[in-house]
Length: 244
Image 1 (cartoon, rainbow, N blue to C red):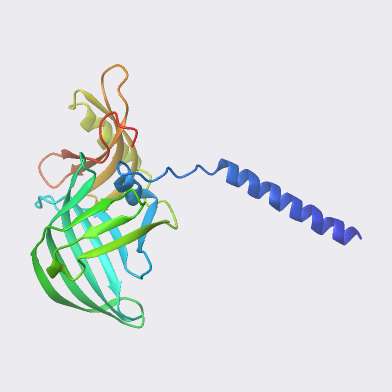
Image 2 (image 1 turned 90 degrees about the vertical axis):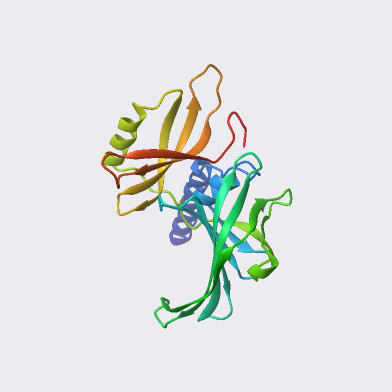
């Protein structure tokens, strides 16, 4: 009897802790046309509706490129082979759409360790593909007919873990120093989205225009330390004063 009571108490405690944990877990914001890109960079993954292809988005850290985002679509043929498409895009914040300018296509073969053994280039060319969030809650890649992936719809799934990383003290200092020369907008850093050899850093920030009643909006701050002095540029993710 005592053992049964102890088991029941343990179950009740576990349930109560689970309820507390669930209550404290912040709810993920609903995906909208205005915030889907920000959420893709931080909390959301995409998998083909009724299929196996996946879609990922990452900022381009090559300061020589005009395109600011890389969209990677992987279509598995088997456990050891598949086709990968890399679309290089710019983001139009007014219409909430990624617009591709070029695409690379590879046929990938994987070894027993899960690493790529062979990457065969299939083509490298210009494209007019787009990636857009629809009212149906799906993310649709619309490619050229020659892209081999002319139309694919992807469903959102929660990422296994938050994709951003906490800023280091040095990175916080860099942001604070760079803000001294920026007028009209304040930038509150939230997390590091990507970095390349600690020379190019992409930081998600909450930006607010310095005026009464201004609403914050999301931007990516790119800090480039390759030159004589750090340079900063911005990519806007959500519209000014928008709820999305």
